[in-house]
Image (tube, rainbow, N blue to C red; front, side):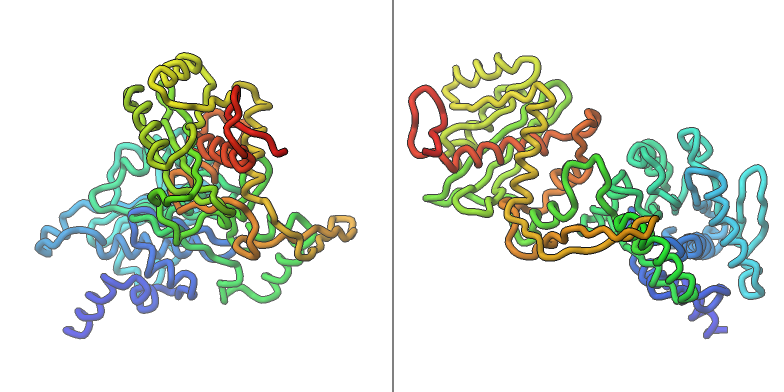
Amino acid sequence: MDKIDGIWKRMSKDPVLFANVLLPKKPHPGQITWLNEANKAINVLVPGNRWGKSTVIAMRHIWHNVFKVGLPLMSPEAWLRADYQTMSTAMSADQAEIVFREAKNLLNDPKTRPLVASIRTTPFPQIRFYNGAIMHCRSSHDDARYIDGHQYRFLSVDEAGWISELKRFMNNVYIMRLAGGGMIDLIGTPKGYGDLYFYYSRGERKVKHYYSQRGSIYDNPFLSREDVEMRDQLLASGNPKLREQVLYGSFVDFAGLAFTQDQMHNAFREDLRESKPYIKGHKYVTAWDLGRQNDFTVGITLDYTERPWRLVKYERLNKVAWESIYSMIERTRQEYHCRWATIDGTGPGGDVIEEEMSKRGIPIDSVKTNTSGLKVELINGLQTALDEGREVVGEYETVDESGMVHKHPQMEEAREGNWGILRMPPIVQLMDEMGMYKLDDKKLVQDSVFALALAVKSAYDAEYVRAPVFGGLYGSRN
C-alpha cells in the first residue's frame, strides 16, 4: 500500500509518469516536453498536422482533474468537496468534441475507468471524475457565451489559430474565467501571423508567465513513414510556406504584413540593453510619434555613429500632460546631444504642437504623414533599413500543379552575414507591433512602428548632413 501511495503522490506532480502508468496511449517525445514544461499561466503549442495535439490536450485535462492540480493543501475531506472544473474549447462544437472523444477513449480502459464517475454528451459534453472534478467541452462561438459565467482551473483552446479575434476572447472571456492559480493552453497549427503569434512570441522570448513550443509532424513516431512522406510529397508541389506551416508548425509570412520574421529576427538582438547612455563623440537622432486622444506617445532614439545603427532608448507613455511630453522630448534631445527632435506633425493640433514646442525653444523637424502615400513611403524606409545589404546566396525550386519547375532566389537567413542596418534590444511592445503591422489596418496599435520609422528616416537624412544650412535643417549629399 505504501508503494502505491508513493507512486500516486509522484504521479500528482508528474503528468508524464501518470500517462505512462495509467493511460492506454503513451506520450511521444514532443508530447513529453509539453506535459513537463507547459506549466506557465499561458502556454502556446503550435504543432504541425498529425502531431497528436488532441491526445495531449485530453491527457492534460485528465491529469488536472484526477489530482485537482493547483489546489492549496487541505484535508482529504475538504479536497473531495472542493470545486474543480476544467474547460476544453474550440471555435466550433465539432472541433471541441474531438478532444472530448479522445478523453473518453483514454478513460475507457480497465486502469482508468475507476477514475470516472459519469460521462454525458448532452446538452454539453462533460466528464465527472471520482473526486467531483468536471471536464467540460464547449464551443467558443457566439462570443463564447457558453463558457462565460463559470470558473475554471485549467482552460484549453484548440485550433486557436482559427480564432481571428483571439486577443479579444482572451481578455474578455478566457482570462476572466480562470479560478485562482489557473492556466490557459492555446493550441493550434499556425494560420499566418495572427493573434496566436502574439502569444507564441511572448513564450519564445521567455517573457514571464508564458511558455511556447513548436511541433513537427516528424515528432510523432506513431505515424507510419508512408503517411508522412505522402503528405510531404503532396505539399511539395504547392506554396513552400504552406508546407512549413502544415508539417512543422511554422509561422509563415503571407500577404499583408509589412515586416517579415527574417527581418525582425535579424534586427532584434538579445544581447542589447533596452537603454544605453550617451557616449561622447557618438551621433544620435531622436524621433517621436505624439499621442492624440487615446493614442500612446512613443519616443525612439538611435545611435547612427556607424552601421548598423543601434536603438539606445525607447519611451512609451499614455495620458500624460502635453507639458510633460514637451519636457521629456527636450530632455532626451539634450541627453543625447541631438540637433533636433523629429516629430509626427500629422493630425488635429499638429501645427499647434509645433508652435508650442517652438515657443519653448525646442528645435524640431515635423514630418507629415497625412496621406497614404506618405505613410507608405515612411514604412518603406524602415523596410529598406531592415533589409539593406541582404544578398542572394542561392536558389530553391518549387513544382506547380502542372509539373512545371519554378526557381526562386534564396536570400541570406537572419543573422547570416551582416545585412540590415538596424539593431534593437528585444522590446516586447515594439516586437508585438511590428509582428502584426499591416499598412491597411487602422485598428492596430502602431505608435511604436511610426516612431521607429521616423527615427530611421531621421538617421538616413542625418548621415548626409555636412554642416548647418541656413533656412533648413539638412545639408545635401554634395
